[in-house]
Image (cartoon, rainbow, N blue to C red):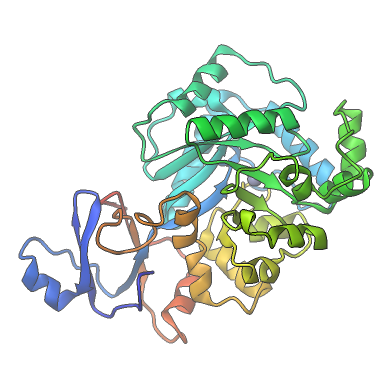
Amino acid sequence: MDGEPLENGAFVVNQNHFVDAGPASQLSEKYPGEFVDLGECIVLPGLINAHCHLDYSSFRGSILPSRNFPQWISRINALKRSLSDDDYLKAMDLGFAELRRSGVTSVFDIVATPQILPRLAPPRIRTWFFLELIDIRPRPWIDESAFGSWLFFEPNHWLGGFGLSPHAPYTASAELYSQALAAAHNFKLPFTTHLSESASEYEMFADGKGDLFDFLSKMGRPMSDCGRFSPFRRLALSGLLPKDALLVHMNELDEADLNLLDQDEWRSLSIVHCPKSSRFLHHRPFPMQALRERGFNICLGTDSLASNDSLNLFSEMRMAARNHGFVSAKELLEMVTVKPAHAIGLEQSLGKIRPGYLADAISIPFRGGYRSIYEEIIDYRNDVLWMMVDGKAGA
Ligand SMILES: [Zn+2]
């Protein structure tokens, strides 16, 4: 992702950084140390999954694809109530293992179960944990949840970091958004939120009616913020979004939203599209072209196994390629490498095989016969051959 692909290439790693990259013939003369021959393969930067919920990794196949958004929420809430902390820990392990197999070396993960974090072994890939914030119904804050949540504000010893994630404008109040915004600012934490995901959410905010409106008003949510603006404008016009937030989904945008997004003050937003999750929930097609031509930093994520059958970014790239034929394979690969690195503020150190960058890389077999190396990469359908995270190679 740093210039054109290189045939018979090599890179040199010192501790956790790349220090050189170029033709193998030149580097082997320049660096007389130990060389590892990775064989006939394609080496590329480790992939970055920009949106995931690893604590739901045991939900694969537990919820049928649905057009009814409130029904899907009720089902996931019922499943969540049936799990113990040990179940969640197992789910995290399964999720991390699946990410590694499919070449993910960094993940932005939403955490609804902070109480398990003190018991979690340090992840073997770079992980940004985002604390999920919801106040539609007061959560019983047991000591373990409070303790786990404190970790988000402490210097951490894991690869990666911490962030904050008010869940969505229909489950988190304006006050909670504004507190999260202030905390993100004070502690310099990244900020992500689900936004404008479904037609139900759009209808609730814009028109003050619909199935999600009925479902949430029955739960006792005050609905006075509905019936006026789209979900995006509901937050943006009230000063409840940081200008460099990662906005997840953004499927439902109207003309007025796009006009607002045309303004320079929103230029630094990153937008995360989850192609397979959107299909699972029958959402409106993601406005790829409208957001792309406005120059937004668009990233791809898998979302959770409650709305997907895998945590595999190769299949997300293929789904995006099918839905948006005008986006090249190279650009899709940028959406899982350099663009999410930019979204987290690490465009100078993550997402490329380039001297000075963090040494995260993967390899897949080289087969040939494709129009470009990028098309060959996104068509890859197996586990990766080899992986390096932070300069350490492993299976
Ligand atoms: Zn999500």
